[in-house]
Every structure is written in structure tokens, then in C-alpha cells.
Length: 323
Image (cartoon, rainbow, N blue to C red; front, side, top):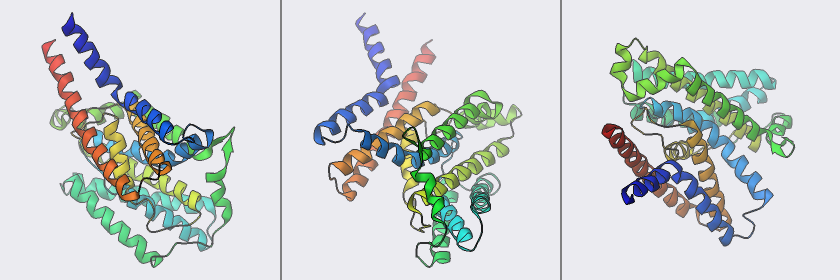
């Protein structure tokens, strides 16, 4: 009986551990900062996580195939800068947005091509893209923010429906679409299959190259969307924008229980991981925690999240073997 209770407690911890941590953080920050449990704070958190949430969905797809994408922040920055420069030069909003998104997808395709055709490790391929694109952003702007386009573009980030910001609604739509594609389509099953056992998937007739190209292009597209939202929020194309966004996305995905080895994880949990990161960041800011300490805390959280995720997977696999 005691053994059964032990396993039940462990099962609850493995299944709902991230929710327990989230609730714990909310309680702690509500004690440390009297204004934490307020509508304004909730709106601030939702706005903050909207951009991270969008990039995290794309990152989730890549990691599920056993890959990694360190270029999402740089792709977001170049997309924002490109759209800003297009509008600055007389283009209207929609053509500027579409052209910038095409560039984002192209950069994702470059990542996918490097991984699938050049057989480069995803870490190296996307790190190279990250560094190169960040350099491009600084070169084309001279290191200065791009202004001089219509202020109406910034209205998207400020507008809301029933008190819910448009950018939050966009994140929810991206999440819903990402969830449907991953859980209800053949492509989604192939993504899990490639991450779980690439060779078996190939022998089963799955076009592994096509799947990997798709996830990197999808990640590039969502990074572009995030960059455009950021552009609307700041109303300027900044070459330094979205710095370290890739680490926030990776941390949120791993917090959600997605294995860095691929093939394991649920997109619902990823969104909880995104919310947890938002609560942690906002809470530390409201408590006056220095930026350097915030980086330290996020780094420790990433390490602990990876360790916990891999431990959870091992426990589940052992139980399945016993059955």
C-alpha cells in the first residue's frame, strides 16, 4: 500500500510538477510584492509572454524532432528591422509585413537546409545563422533604431478587445493552430516519430528531410511573427531586439517537459512553461532583482528543467517496461 502511495505521489509530481512550481512562484511573489496580484500585473505578464509564447511554439516543433534553433531571436530582429525599413521607404503595412515574413521563412529554410543537406549539427548551423543575422541587422541599420514609419503600425500592440490585448489573442491563436497541427494531423505524428526514432521513421516511408525542413521554416515564420509584434510594441526596428529570446524559448519548452532528445512532450505543457517564465521574470523585476541575477536564475531554471524532464522520461520508460 505504501509503495502504491509512493508511486501515486511521484506520478502527481511528474504530471503536475510545473503547475505546482507556478503556484508556488505566484504565492511567493504575492508576499514579496503587494502589487503582484493585480489586473495590471496580469496584463503585463500576458503582454510579456505573448512574444515568447509565439517563438516557443516554433521552438517546440524543432526540439520535438531532436533539433535546436538558436537563431529565433536574430530572425525576429531582422524581420522587425526589414519591415521597418520597407515602411520607411514608402511601402504600405501589408506588403512590408509579408515581405519581412518571407525573409523569416527563408532564414528558417537556410537552417533546415544546413541540417538536412549539409548534415551540420543543428546547434552549429543555427548558431551560425544567429550570429550572421545579428550582424546583418547592425550593418543595415548602422546600429541605430529604424524610425520614420506610420505610428498606426504600433496600434496593434496597444489595442485590445474586452481588455485582452490583440498580441495576447494572436499568441492564443498561434498556440491553438500549433496544437491542432501537432496533435491532429499526419505531419504532427511524423514530427513525433522523427524525434523518437529517425531511422525507423525513414524506413516507414516518412520523408524525414521534408519534416525537418518544415519545422525549421515554421520556427522561422513564428520568429518573424514575434519580431513584427515586437516592432509594433516598440514602434521602432531595433537591431538589438529579441536578444536572448532563444534561451527564454528553450527554457519554456524544456520546462513544459519536452525532451531535448526529441519525440517527447506536449504543447499544452509548453504554454504553462511560458506562463511560468513570465511570472518569474515579472516577479523578479517587481522585486527589484538586478538583471545579472535574473540571468543567473534563468540559467539555473534551465538546468533544473532539463534534469527534471530527463528524469521524468526515465521514470515513465521504466514503468512502461515493467508493464
